[in-house]
Length: 352
Image 1 (tube, rainbow, N blue to C red):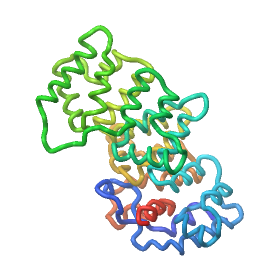
Image 2: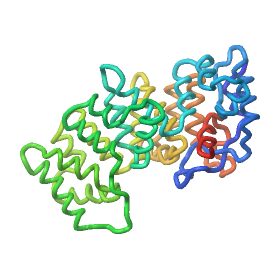
Image 3: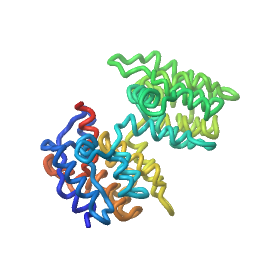
Protein backbone atom coordinates (compact mmCIF):
# COMPACT_ATOMS: atom_id res chain seq x y z
CA UNK A 1 0.00 0.00 0.00
CA UNK A 2 1.33 3.43 -0.91
CA UNK A 3 1.69 5.70 2.10
CA UNK A 4 2.37 9.39 2.43
CA UNK A 5 5.88 8.70 3.72
CA UNK A 6 6.79 6.31 0.89
CA UNK A 7 5.65 8.76 -1.76
CA UNK A 8 6.94 11.97 -0.25
CA UNK A 9 10.35 10.64 0.71
CA UNK A 10 11.18 10.23 -3.00
CA UNK A 11 10.90 13.93 -3.54
CA UNK A 12 13.20 16.89 -2.92
CA UNK A 13 12.24 20.51 -3.40
CA UNK A 14 14.65 23.39 -3.12
CA UNK A 15 15.33 26.70 -4.83
CA UNK A 16 13.15 29.76 -5.38
CA UNK A 17 10.62 30.99 -7.92
CA UNK A 18 9.14 33.91 -5.99
CA UNK A 19 11.01 36.84 -4.51
CA UNK A 20 11.55 38.48 -2.14
CA UNK A 21 9.42 36.31 0.18
CA UNK A 22 11.02 33.13 -1.15
CA UNK A 23 13.65 33.29 1.58
CA UNK A 24 10.93 32.83 4.20
CA UNK A 25 9.11 29.87 2.67
CA UNK A 26 9.03 26.50 4.34
CA UNK A 27 8.47 24.94 0.90
CA UNK A 28 10.82 25.59 -1.99
CA UNK A 29 10.91 24.52 -5.63
CA UNK A 30 13.03 21.56 -6.79
CA UNK A 31 15.65 22.41 -9.41
CA UNK A 32 15.45 18.95 -11.08
CA UNK A 33 11.68 19.04 -11.41
CA UNK A 34 10.29 16.55 -14.00
CA UNK A 35 6.55 16.89 -14.62
CA UNK A 36 6.18 13.70 -16.68
CA UNK A 37 8.02 11.51 -14.18
CA UNK A 38 6.03 12.86 -11.27
CA UNK A 39 2.72 12.55 -13.12
CA UNK A 40 3.52 8.85 -13.67
CA UNK A 41 4.30 8.46 -9.95
CA UNK A 42 0.97 10.03 -9.04
CA UNK A 43 -0.95 7.91 -11.54
CA UNK A 44 0.61 4.79 -10.04
CA UNK A 45 -0.16 5.96 -6.51
CA UNK A 46 -3.79 6.70 -7.29
CA UNK A 47 -4.25 3.25 -8.83
CA UNK A 48 -2.79 1.56 -5.76
CA UNK A 49 -5.53 -0.06 -3.72
CA UNK A 50 -5.85 1.42 -0.26
CA UNK A 51 -3.84 4.57 -0.94
CA UNK A 52 -4.43 7.00 1.90
CA UNK A 53 -2.28 9.97 0.82
CA UNK A 54 -1.38 11.26 -2.61
CA UNK A 55 1.35 13.69 -3.53
CA UNK A 56 0.64 15.98 -6.40
CA UNK A 57 2.92 17.11 -9.19
CA UNK A 58 1.33 18.83 -12.10
CA UNK A 59 -2.28 18.72 -13.18
CA UNK A 60 -1.49 19.23 -16.84
CA UNK A 61 1.05 16.41 -17.02
CA UNK A 62 -1.30 14.10 -15.15
CA UNK A 63 -4.27 14.93 -17.36
CA UNK A 64 -2.21 14.48 -20.51
CA UNK A 65 -1.14 11.03 -19.33
CA UNK A 66 -4.46 9.75 -17.95
CA UNK A 67 -7.08 11.93 -19.70
CA UNK A 68 -8.54 12.58 -16.26
CA UNK A 69 -8.72 15.72 -14.13
CA UNK A 70 -6.27 15.48 -11.25
CA UNK A 71 -8.54 17.09 -8.66
CA UNK A 72 -11.35 14.63 -9.44
CA UNK A 73 -8.98 11.69 -9.19
CA UNK A 74 -7.72 12.91 -5.84
CA UNK A 75 -11.21 13.37 -4.46
CA UNK A 76 -11.83 9.68 -5.06
CA UNK A 77 -8.61 8.74 -3.23
CA UNK A 78 -8.73 11.16 -0.28
CA UNK A 79 -11.17 12.22 2.42
CA UNK A 80 -11.58 14.59 5.34
CA UNK A 81 -9.01 17.18 6.34
CA UNK A 82 -6.31 15.52 4.25
CA UNK A 83 -8.39 16.02 1.11
CA UNK A 84 -8.89 19.68 2.04
CA UNK A 85 -5.14 20.21 2.39
CA UNK A 86 -4.14 18.50 -0.85
CA UNK A 87 -6.87 20.04 -3.00
CA UNK A 88 -6.00 23.44 -1.56
CA UNK A 89 -2.40 22.97 -2.65
CA UNK A 90 -3.52 22.43 -6.24
CA UNK A 91 -4.71 26.03 -6.43
CA UNK A 92 -2.78 29.23 -6.98
CA UNK A 93 -2.88 31.64 -4.00
CA UNK A 94 -5.51 33.80 -5.71
CA UNK A 95 -7.67 30.78 -6.58
CA UNK A 96 -7.34 29.45 -3.05
CA UNK A 97 -8.32 32.69 -1.34
CA UNK A 98 -11.16 33.23 -3.80
CA UNK A 99 -12.57 29.80 -2.96
CA UNK A 100 -12.15 30.43 0.78
CA UNK A 101 -13.98 33.76 0.48
CA UNK A 102 -16.73 32.10 -1.53
CA UNK A 103 -17.14 29.49 1.21
CA UNK A 104 -17.16 32.14 3.94
CA UNK A 105 -20.15 33.90 2.35
CA UNK A 106 -22.05 30.82 1.20
CA UNK A 107 -25.52 30.04 2.52
CA UNK A 108 -27.51 31.79 5.21
CA UNK A 109 -24.68 32.25 7.71
CA UNK A 110 -21.51 34.23 6.97
CA UNK A 111 -18.18 33.04 8.39
CA UNK A 112 -17.08 36.49 9.51
CA UNK A 113 -13.84 35.26 11.07
CA UNK A 114 -12.60 33.79 7.78
CA UNK A 115 -13.74 36.84 5.84
CA UNK A 116 -11.94 39.17 8.25
CA UNK A 117 -8.69 37.16 8.30
CA UNK A 118 -8.38 37.05 4.51
CA UNK A 119 -9.50 40.61 3.70
CA UNK A 120 -7.45 42.23 6.49
CA UNK A 121 -4.22 40.36 5.76
CA UNK A 122 -3.89 40.59 1.96
CA UNK A 123 -1.94 43.21 0.01
CA UNK A 124 -3.38 45.45 -2.72
CA UNK A 125 -2.00 43.21 -5.45
CA UNK A 126 -3.29 40.05 -3.79
CA UNK A 127 -6.79 41.48 -3.27
CA UNK A 128 -6.98 42.66 -6.87
CA UNK A 129 -5.87 39.27 -8.17
CA UNK A 130 -8.33 37.46 -5.87
CA UNK A 131 -11.17 39.59 -7.18
CA UNK A 132 -10.08 39.03 -10.78
CA UNK A 133 -10.03 35.26 -10.31
CA UNK A 134 -13.34 35.32 -8.46
CA UNK A 135 -15.07 37.51 -11.03
CA UNK A 136 -13.66 36.30 -14.34
CA UNK A 137 -12.40 32.75 -13.90
CA UNK A 138 -14.12 30.99 -11.02
CA UNK A 139 -17.48 32.21 -9.79
CA UNK A 140 -18.45 35.12 -12.06
CA UNK A 141 -19.24 37.20 -8.99
CA UNK A 142 -17.75 40.43 -7.70
CA UNK A 143 -16.09 40.34 -4.27
CA UNK A 144 -17.38 43.77 -3.29
CA UNK A 145 -20.96 42.87 -4.21
CA UNK A 146 -20.73 39.60 -2.29
CA UNK A 147 -19.54 41.45 0.82
CA UNK A 148 -22.35 43.99 0.53
CA UNK A 149 -24.96 41.24 0.22
CA UNK A 150 -23.63 39.27 3.20
CA UNK A 151 -22.62 41.97 5.70
CA UNK A 152 -24.05 45.24 6.96
CA UNK A 153 -23.44 48.63 8.56
CA UNK A 154 -19.92 49.85 9.41
CA UNK A 155 -18.50 46.34 9.30
CA UNK A 156 -19.60 46.11 5.66
CA UNK A 157 -18.07 49.51 4.88
CA UNK A 158 -14.73 48.49 6.40
CA UNK A 159 -14.62 45.19 4.50
CA UNK A 160 -15.55 46.84 1.20
CA UNK A 161 -12.94 49.58 1.65
CA UNK A 162 -10.24 46.97 2.27
CA UNK A 163 -11.39 44.69 -0.55
CA UNK A 164 -10.91 47.49 -3.09
CA UNK A 165 -7.16 47.12 -2.58
CA UNK A 166 -6.41 50.82 -2.84
CA UNK A 167 -4.15 51.29 0.16
CA UNK A 168 -1.20 53.62 -0.47
CA UNK A 169 2.03 51.75 -1.14
CA UNK A 170 5.02 52.17 1.16
CA UNK A 171 7.29 54.95 -0.09
CA UNK A 172 10.79 56.16 0.64
CA UNK A 173 9.63 59.51 2.06
CA UNK A 174 8.26 59.60 5.61
CA UNK A 175 5.68 62.34 6.15
CA UNK A 176 5.97 62.99 9.88
CA UNK A 177 3.50 65.84 9.75
CA UNK A 178 0.80 63.61 8.26
CA UNK A 179 1.66 60.84 10.73
CA UNK A 180 1.07 63.21 13.62
CA UNK A 181 -2.16 64.54 12.08
CA UNK A 182 -3.52 61.04 11.43
CA UNK A 183 -2.70 59.93 14.96
CA UNK A 184 -4.51 62.93 16.38
CA UNK A 185 -7.46 62.35 14.04
CA UNK A 186 -7.78 58.75 15.23
CA UNK A 187 -7.83 59.97 18.83
CA UNK A 188 -10.27 62.79 18.11
CA UNK A 189 -12.58 60.39 16.25
CA UNK A 190 -12.59 57.88 19.08
CA UNK A 191 -11.39 58.14 22.65
CA UNK A 192 -11.56 61.94 22.85
CA UNK A 193 -15.26 62.17 22.05
CA UNK A 194 -18.51 60.50 22.99
CA UNK A 195 -19.27 57.94 20.35
CA UNK A 196 -16.94 56.93 17.53
CA UNK A 197 -16.47 58.53 14.13
CA UNK A 198 -16.09 55.15 12.43
CA UNK A 199 -15.84 56.54 8.87
CA UNK A 200 -12.74 58.51 9.91
CA UNK A 201 -11.16 55.36 11.36
CA UNK A 202 -12.01 53.42 8.21
CA UNK A 203 -10.58 56.12 5.98
CA UNK A 204 -7.21 56.26 7.72
CA UNK A 205 -6.81 52.53 8.32
CA UNK A 206 -7.71 51.46 4.77
CA UNK A 207 -5.99 54.21 2.79
CA UNK A 208 -2.64 54.79 4.49
CA UNK A 209 0.34 52.55 3.73
CA UNK A 210 1.37 49.83 6.17
CA UNK A 211 4.61 51.60 7.08
CA UNK A 212 2.74 54.86 7.63
CA UNK A 213 0.14 53.14 9.84
CA UNK A 214 2.83 51.53 11.96
CA UNK A 215 4.19 54.96 12.75
CA UNK A 216 0.68 56.35 13.32
CA UNK A 217 -0.02 53.71 15.96
CA UNK A 218 3.21 54.56 17.76
CA UNK A 219 2.46 58.28 17.64
CA UNK A 220 -1.13 57.62 18.77
CA UNK A 221 0.15 56.66 22.23
CA UNK A 222 1.36 60.23 22.76
CA UNK A 223 -2.25 61.45 22.49
CA UNK A 224 -4.11 58.64 24.23
CA UNK A 225 -3.42 56.72 27.46
CA UNK A 226 -4.41 53.54 25.61
CA UNK A 227 -2.78 51.98 22.55
CA UNK A 228 -4.77 51.45 19.35
CA UNK A 229 -5.84 47.90 20.19
CA UNK A 230 -7.10 48.91 23.63
CA UNK A 231 -8.91 51.89 22.13
CA UNK A 232 -10.69 49.68 19.60
CA UNK A 233 -11.92 47.39 22.37
CA UNK A 234 -13.34 50.37 24.24
CA UNK A 235 -14.93 52.08 21.22
CA UNK A 236 -16.58 49.39 19.04
CA UNK A 237 -18.03 45.90 19.46
CA UNK A 238 -18.97 42.81 17.50
CA UNK A 239 -17.68 42.07 14.00
CA UNK A 240 -16.46 45.64 13.59
CA UNK A 241 -14.29 45.35 16.70
CA UNK A 242 -12.94 42.01 15.51
CA UNK A 243 -12.15 43.40 12.07
CA UNK A 244 -10.34 46.50 13.38
CA UNK A 245 -8.34 44.37 15.83
CA UNK A 246 -7.29 41.93 13.10
CA UNK A 247 -6.38 44.80 10.80
CA UNK A 248 -4.20 46.58 13.35
CA UNK A 249 -2.47 43.34 14.35
CA UNK A 250 -1.69 42.60 10.69
CA UNK A 251 -0.27 46.07 10.23
CA UNK A 252 1.88 45.87 13.35
CA UNK A 253 3.37 42.42 12.71
CA UNK A 254 1.76 40.10 10.16
CA UNK A 255 3.86 36.97 10.92
CA UNK A 256 3.01 37.35 14.62
CA UNK A 257 -0.65 37.77 13.71
CA UNK A 258 -0.66 34.42 11.92
CA UNK A 259 1.35 32.79 14.71
CA UNK A 260 -1.41 33.88 17.11
CA UNK A 261 -4.07 32.54 14.73
CA UNK A 262 -2.31 29.18 14.56
CA UNK A 263 -1.96 29.00 18.33
CA UNK A 264 -5.63 29.84 18.85
CA UNK A 265 -6.62 27.17 16.33
CA UNK A 266 -4.89 24.49 18.41
CA UNK A 267 -5.22 25.63 22.01
CA UNK A 268 -7.61 23.94 24.41
CA UNK A 269 -9.77 20.95 23.52
CA UNK A 270 -10.34 20.37 19.84
CA UNK A 271 -8.70 21.94 16.81
CA UNK A 272 -10.09 24.64 14.54
CA UNK A 273 -8.94 22.79 11.44
CA UNK A 274 -10.32 25.29 8.93
CA UNK A 275 -8.01 28.04 10.21
CA UNK A 276 -5.06 25.69 10.69
CA UNK A 277 -5.32 24.33 7.14
CA UNK A 278 -5.84 27.72 5.51
CA UNK A 279 -2.74 29.26 7.09
CA UNK A 280 -0.50 26.23 6.55
CA UNK A 281 -1.55 25.84 2.90
CA UNK A 282 -1.44 29.52 1.96
CA UNK A 283 1.73 30.54 3.82
CA UNK A 284 4.04 27.57 3.25
CA UNK A 285 5.23 29.23 0.04
CA UNK A 286 5.18 32.76 1.41
CA UNK A 287 6.41 33.49 4.93
CA UNK A 288 6.11 30.32 7.02
CA UNK A 289 9.64 30.68 8.39
CA UNK A 290 8.77 34.09 9.80
CA UNK A 291 5.54 32.75 11.29
CA UNK A 292 7.39 29.81 12.85
CA UNK A 293 9.95 32.18 14.38
CA UNK A 294 7.27 34.41 15.91
CA UNK A 295 5.40 31.34 17.18
CA UNK A 296 8.47 30.00 18.99
CA UNK A 297 9.37 33.42 20.38
CA UNK A 298 5.91 34.05 21.86
CA UNK A 299 4.76 30.57 22.89
CA UNK A 300 8.08 28.95 23.81
CA UNK A 301 7.58 25.81 21.71
CA UNK A 302 7.93 24.96 18.06
CA UNK A 303 4.91 25.12 15.75
CA UNK A 304 5.96 21.66 14.55
CA UNK A 305 5.45 20.34 18.10
CA UNK A 306 1.96 21.83 18.40
CA UNK A 307 0.89 20.29 15.09
CA UNK A 308 2.22 16.91 16.25
CA UNK A 309 0.18 17.15 19.43
CA UNK A 310 -3.08 18.32 17.84
CA UNK A 311 -3.34 16.29 14.63
CA UNK A 312 -2.79 12.71 13.55
CA UNK A 313 -2.37 10.36 10.63
CA UNK A 314 -1.60 11.44 7.09
CA UNK A 315 -3.33 14.78 7.74
CA UNK A 316 -0.67 15.42 10.36
CA UNK A 317 2.12 14.34 8.02
CA UNK A 318 0.93 16.73 5.31
CA UNK A 319 0.85 19.68 7.74
CA UNK A 320 4.27 18.81 9.16
CA UNK A 321 5.78 18.73 5.67
CA UNK A 322 4.34 22.19 5.05
CA UNK A 323 5.67 23.43 8.38
CA UNK A 324 9.18 21.98 8.10
CA UNK A 325 11.41 20.95 11.00
CA UNK A 326 12.56 23.61 13.47
CA UNK A 327 14.63 21.68 15.99
CA UNK A 328 17.87 22.21 14.08
CA UNK A 329 19.44 24.69 11.68
CA UNK A 330 19.74 22.94 8.29
CA UNK A 331 21.96 24.14 5.48
CA UNK A 332 20.37 25.59 2.37
CA UNK A 333 20.65 22.25 0.55
CA UNK A 334 19.32 20.29 3.50
CA UNK A 335 16.47 22.68 4.26
CA UNK A 336 13.08 21.12 3.75
CA UNK A 337 14.35 18.39 1.47
CA UNK A 338 11.09 16.47 1.74
CA UNK A 339 7.81 18.22 0.97
CA UNK A 340 4.64 17.41 -0.98
CA UNK A 341 4.99 17.42 -4.75
CA UNK A 342 1.64 19.15 -4.99
CA UNK A 343 3.32 22.47 -4.36
CA UNK A 344 4.88 22.28 -7.83
CA UNK A 345 1.51 23.17 -9.33
CA UNK A 346 2.13 26.83 -8.60
CA UNK A 347 5.58 26.60 -10.20
CA UNK A 348 4.10 25.32 -13.46
CA UNK A 349 1.25 27.78 -13.58
CA UNK A 350 3.63 30.68 -12.97
CA UNK A 351 5.87 29.49 -15.80
CA UNK A 352 3.17 29.03 -18.44
